[in-house]
Image (cartoon, rainbow, N blue to C red):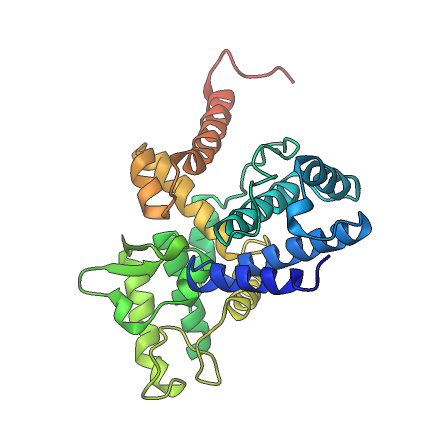
Length: 300
């Protein structure tokens, strides 16, 4: 590839971070996808971006799939290419977007795993043994109470929580802000942590959740603390933030039947993303039917 190929990728990644406000995790994935494209272009003796056509992009996707990349990862790669080529068109480096009409292989629909209500209750029942465990309980309560994403929770400041109004303001995907309710028990757990927080946080710290060193607790640290809590107090299921988010959405939909309301609480831009939980709900109803309906019971 031309010498400045890497420079254009770096400019695009800066654009994603500063203008699109995408998470570091998403930006990192796109960086790997675009560097893989450069390697493909070098192997195919493509010297500049303008030489790429839809055949090259289709071949790039097919090679990735053949090398073991799953349909969802291939789809993400194509999404990264479409965005990057669109950026190059805006910068007058390409005349057309060769990835526009390329589709990834179909992926089997995977339903997210969830905890049932009793499992969640058992997870939140233990009494914290120290200040950091109180913080961890507050994190788990807040994740389940409000259905927050990991990055949204890690970015919370003290001023984002309103305990009196029982709401929290979060910065979601695409730098969109939303205000969501916080349950009574989650407010109590967070309030208990706030009384202990000065032991660790400095006077100028804005972060709601801080670590032993007084700095904001990062996403990776939150994941590790959830696993530790689950190993000590949990139902034997590996605990991660999205499992709590999925459980929140499923339990709320089972109770309310309000798909649009659940979409707003989760911060989904497209309701089709939320509709996966209607399939989970149907599975729940089907199990009840099979267990209870006289004509559905299977003979042993």
